[in-house]
Length: 161
Image 1 (cartoon, rainbow, N blue to C red):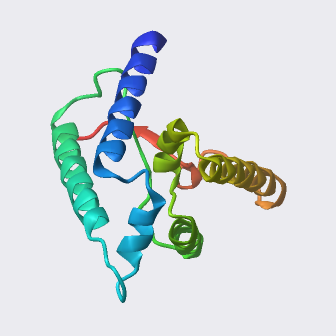
Image 2 (image 1 turned 180 degrees about the vertical axis):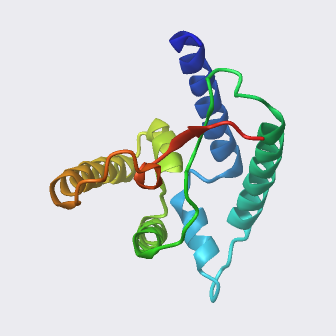
């Protein structure tokens, strides 16, 4: 697989994702806050967008199970484990709190950079800083992983069948 083809496919997928977010109004953080405001002026738009996204992802996984490999790579990159543990729950809670307070999550925030709005740049800067801090803390304080233990690897290339 050529790197140029993989990069082109990623670029097209990202542009399509950003276009979908823009058309659905999800670049506006007020939509997210409106969805969370169940006692006030509730906006169900996000529920429809999420429903559409889950439907498309479900179809994609069903199709992937029938394919020997992706079109532009040697294998599918899937998480090797499905266990729900403390770090997963803590991360999900932090993500949800941040999304609710700011109205942004990483994908829409990156697409919203195109609006040129200062709050978006502040959010993306804080997000990148948080990612860097996590990487630093993870390298510094996590115990070393045993060699050869695939259960501790963040992702594994697998063939679906």
